[in-house]
Every structure is written in C-alpha cells, then in structure tokens.
Length: 298
Image 1 (cartoon, rainbow, N blue to C red):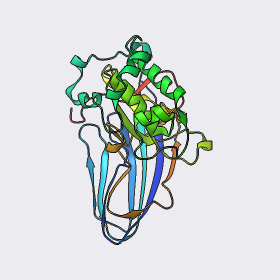
Image 2: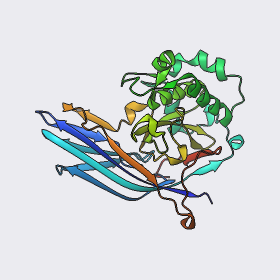
Image 3: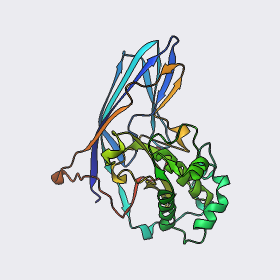
Image 4: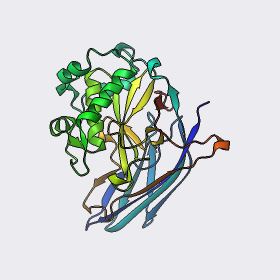
C-alpha cells in the first residue's frame, strides 16, 4: 500500500473592480480525483456574492464562477487534501502508440496556443528520436529543458510561448512546462499542463506561489514531471489541468480590474503522521502519478 501525503493550504486573492461590473472564473479549488481527495475545504468571499462551482467531468478540475460589482473583492480558500500516489519503477512505464491511445487523451497530442509542437519536430527528433521509448525518454526531455532554460523570476509574460522560451532560454515554471509539453507532443507523446502550489520550493525564489508542471500519458496513467525543478513533485496539490496555461489560469477576468494588491498570498504545509500512514513529500526516483487516465464518471 502506498503511503499518503496530506497537505493543507490556503490562498488569498485581492482585486479592485473598477466602475463597471466584472465576471470572474477562478481555478483555485483543489481538484477531486481518485487519487486526490479533499478532506475539508472552505471558501470566503468579501463581499459575500452569489457564486457557483463547476467540476470538469473529465479531469476533476473545479471552476468558481462569480459576478462582482465595483469595489474591492477578496477571495480566500483553504483546503486539506490527501494524495495517494501511484508509484512505479521507471523501467516498467512504457509509451503508448498513438493507435492505442484513449480518445479523450488525443487532444493532448496537438499543438496549442503556448505549445507549438509542430514547430519543434526537427529539434525533438534530433535530440530524442533515437532514444528508446518509455519513461526514461520523457525524463530525458525533462532534463534537457531543465539544463537549457534558466529559472528567472519575472522573465516572461502572459504571451510567452514554448518557442519564445526556446529562443530566450530563460523563464518561470509555466515556460519550462510549455517547452517540455511541446517537445513531448512533437514525439507523439500526450502531454498536458498542470497547476498546483510550489511545495518545497527554495525560499530564495520568493514567497510560496502557484506552480506549473507537466503530466505525460504513459502506460495507462498521467505521470508527473517538473522541468523547472523548483519544487517537490510528491507535494503537488493539483488545481487544474489543460492543454496549456490558457486553459487553467488561476483567474480569468472579464472586465476592468486593478492588478491584485497585494499579490496572491499562499501557504502550504505537509501534515505528517507515521501512525496514520501520512508521510512528508520527498524527492524520489519512482515514476509518480495521481491520475489513472479515466474520465471521472467511469
């Protein structure tokens, strides 16, 4: 039986809606999956507003939707989640031929707004085309991105794509993720963008923040990869997954607002208890997954 990681986190977002009303879609709730169970959660809105939370039936991502009038808006969300990782030996994890991929996985083979895999075909096959298929080849893609791109805060913006990152060779976690995803798709490997919180990140990088990482479909599951190397994959609380960052922004805003002030405030901690089988997240050599690859209704 695999041990369980229990993580407790809180986040706060602050906005000021300008003269006209504004619509928001937030992706800040912990996803509900077979491997990630939300034990407790609470949401506070100031002012109190009518809202709804919709769950994506394919991947368990949850979206908070609300309409706010002019003035300040504060959102606070807290949750405690249990994550039961599926752990496998890397040598036992195989690639899946395109002909045998489940239909709902196919969209993650295609180029997308930030992951222009069709422009990276030559590079992908030059660097990785001769490697034996399997988990090790995906790890080689992850390691290549980690070596060739330097992490630098505020070095990119919302328009930066995988090709931009390849040229500039600097970025933040979302840029590392976009480049790895594009290279995997160029190798006919389904890859998707995932958002979480950077548990275990070096405090020198700044305050706790949202984190972007990669999930690649191998065998019959989505496996975790962190090309930026700034956090501990075993400590990722999944918030959302999508083709790229455009699908899972923590806040999508339809209207005029001032930038969040203060910046998003986040805190996360692991609740370890050996007697209860709860362990702290650590770096490990296992292939880790928190998604069995099936739509939630199956």
